[in-house]
Image (cartoon, rainbow, N blue to C red; front, side):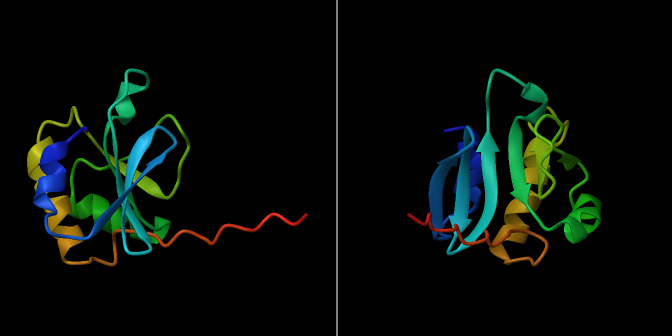
Length: 118
């Protein structure tokens, strides 16, 4: 499990894990909050991915200096704290604090999946 220290920072939150698009995604109740990615390809996108609404991206980037747009996948509702960022663990601690405080800047409630009609 990549970045296990980050999961430890979030204890005892009721995290729910789901594999999604090659990342380990984590939910708190119905809200997707973050994902952890450590892969061999496109390593510039390895790190802690934060789910966030577009209107919160600037505020989040001011609080967490290392956050960047995900480069490879064109995903607009996520930011990444890259593992190669100089202060990765310090900023991860700040992210954990925001998540623990249930910050409105972090997390998205996914749209309900449509049922297939037969």
